[in-house]
Image (cartoon, rainbow, N blue to C red; front, top):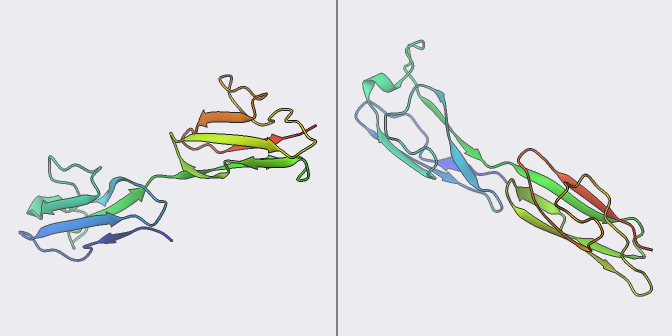
Length: 151
């Protein structure tokens, strides 16, 4: 499911435009993007609700329809995957989709008779792959995968 914008339509000069970005479950609103035209000065484009009065010089001049096009932008999510090398040996938790900047904990739990060995994956120097509980911050435009072999 994807978010949507309430209040879209055609507005005339002098009318007030009231838009609201409605996020789907698990989504987070980021900002408003202007695709065509120009925002009036002083508009906060990071608020979910956007309201302004239409004035003559807001629309683009290249198009005789004099339109302004605004788009809601949602924060991108990144997939994080934790798996085990042998499903009989234990389980790994923490997989999911996360926004950039989120702190993610991957946890390995061995079954009886097995011992956690280490994580394998593209981790940075601040993470200890020998710890069964691994915490890191998701970077924008990056997903992570972690595989844990048990012995």
